[in-house]
Every structure is written in C-alpha cells, then in structure tokens.
Length: 454
Ligand SMILES: *Cc1c(COP(=O)(O)O)cnc(C)c1O
Image (cartoon, rainbow, N blue to C red; front, side, top):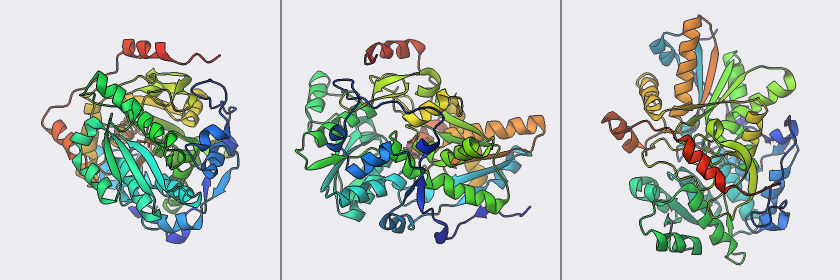
C-alpha cells in the first residue's frame, strides 16, 4: 500500500458525462404532479420555469449524459477536486479503519453547488434566457449561481431567507460582488411575500417560502425570467455525479474500494453526487458498499418524515412530488445552526431509501460540531456546518471499526468549507448551541396539510 495522502486527478480525467441513476433505478419513477390540479405535469408547465434541455434531463432514462464542452471548461477552474486519506484523523481516533474524503470545498465559492450552477446557467444561456431567479438559505447556492451567471452573462435575482440575510452578511456581499440582486425573503417583491409581511412584518422566512417567491417572480415575468433550483431535482443530482465518478478513479489510485460511503443531506444533491456512481456499482456489479445519508435531528425528513406526495414549496406553486417530507409548512427551529433545513428530500434519494438501498441517520448538532473539531484539529480544513453531519457518522463508523477490530474503508463527501459560517462555530465554542429534536407532534401537525393525492 502506498503512503500517499492526496489523490489528485489530471484535468484530462474530468468526467466526460454525468451519470443518470434513472437508468438503473430499482423502482419505477413516480409522477410529478401539477400543484393546482394534482394531475401529472405537462412539459409546458415546467417550461415556464426551466429551459427544455433541463426538463429533458429531468425525465431522461439515458445512463450517461454528455457534459457540454463549455461546462467542462469552467469545471476545470476547480475540478477534478482533491481526494484525501485522513491519516491524521485515523491516528487521532486510533482506528484500524481507513478514512477518505472528497473535498468539494475546493470550488471558488467553497462548496459542491457550482457543479450544477454552471450547467444550469449554460443551458439557460443556450435557450436565450436573459435573467434567472432563485432562492438561497445560508447563501451557498446563491453565491454559486451568482458566479455561474456572471460567467455566462445572465442577470440573477436571489431571494435569501431573511434570517440568514441578516445573520450571514458575507455570503450576501459575495452574491452582490458577482453582480446578482438580492432580496431578504419574505420580500415586498412578490404577491406571496407581501401577503406574509402583512401578516407578520418580522417573519424570519424559510427555504420553502423563498422558493415560492423565486418561482412566483419567474412565473409572472411573462417569459422574461426563468427559475433555477440548487438541489432536490433529478437534473441537479445528475450534474453532481462528477463528484462520485472522480472519487471512483481516486479510489483506484489508492488501490482500495469503500465498505461504507457517507454524505449529508439537505435536498440530497451532494449526497447523490458522491454516492450514485457507487450505488450504480452496487446495483449493476454486485458491489455491497453500505451507503449512509446523514441529516440533522432538527430537520429529519428521511428519518421522521413520511414518504408521500407533497408540495416542493410553502405557497403550493412548485410541483408536487413523492418524497420524504416533514410537510411543506415546515419552519425549521431558529436554534438550529447546521443548515440542511429543507422540508423534503430529493425524490430519487427518497425512493432509494424507501427501497432499502440507502440507510438514513439523524444526528444532533452538538455532536456534529464536536466531530468537526476532532476533524479540523487533525486535518486542518474547517468544514461547513452541513458537512459536519457526514463527518460525525464517519467518525462513529471509524470508532465502531476500532471496537470490532475491523479494517473498514470509510469515505465521506466534505461538501464545503465553513469559512463563512464562523458564527455557528462561535456559538458552539461559547456554549450557545443546544440540541433540538424536531418534535413528533409538529411532524404530525404538518402532515395534516399534505395534498390529497389518490
Ligand atoms: C447546500 C449545501 C448542502 C446541502 O444541500 P444538498 O443538496 O443536500 O447537498 C450541504 N453542504 C454544503 C456545503 C452546502 O452548501
């Protein structure tokens, strides 16, 4: 075995195609429903929001979809991303396990999100889109799409969850630096936002509300603006599969193959991007890698939500899909600092969890920050609060391997760095964070408002 720590791929090894798991799904796809009629949507409905090329990717069953050359050219600014063996963390844990991580924080904005922002901006440009609207929670997606829109000369309007808008000014300034316009959501810019503000001028907002505003702004623009989403949808997960495809090659360089792979889940995109190429091998080549999705106990769609049809947004304007959901009326607790606050989960990830191909775990935030400190004090990188969920379970697995004396090979996706999230670290270091488990009663209440799909 080589003593190598970093496994770096040459630019020529950048994937030529994205991997589409629809080709290998062990269960039939569920319909996407119109939020008004609850009947299957027509491409016309989606065409108000998205260019046809992305709609076709959304429903494609082709296993590999070629990455356009202009997108590969932009990817080369940071891809292939590094893959590391966490030797110092292994020593700190005194574990016989080998721990690897894929580092998506190497992108210019510090997360995996540009992997889809760039192709979405590219396909919109190709379709003649002049302006896009989107939402952002902590600001990571907004900054990724703002960068991509700057590259392709598209105007961008970002609805940022109001609480984050005030708590995370640096992400907001980053978005503005790339040239986008940003509004705190709920805003006075949309009918939905105005109605919410009339009700409560201090409404903190939520991702579901910000999605509603961005969708409304595009849908009522008379064709002038289209909408872009940073997670959940099939085409978004598709674009992220460059992560796992590179990791497979990097595992070859390391001459190992993972026993267990781990990712954090908000809407499911970095998790899917990392794991789907490995799940492909589980499904088609008889590999048996254990696959674990990790979510916060404060926003536990996979472990406490139910697998059913629900709206993608709070105002019931976005399509209805079958997914694990806490109910579209979900408002995440303010005390929760770790991101990953969406009420639902990507339909593809949900279906694979339901069919038993992915295991889900919920972890508490004090444990995730404790795991982050163990990691960063041995490996150096300060992880995004979202990524710490994956680290917590990777460390749990490494300690279980130590307990049982097994040399397991563990890998996780380090979806981003936390340089803009030092406020959350400050709260943790000064004892101001608390654990919070989303109460079963709140889930039960929210599920009263599900659409009646028969
Ligand atoms: C947005 C984000 C996530 C959560 O989104 P997914 O679509 O579930 O990947 C996780 N990590 C980082 C660093 C993010 O920016």
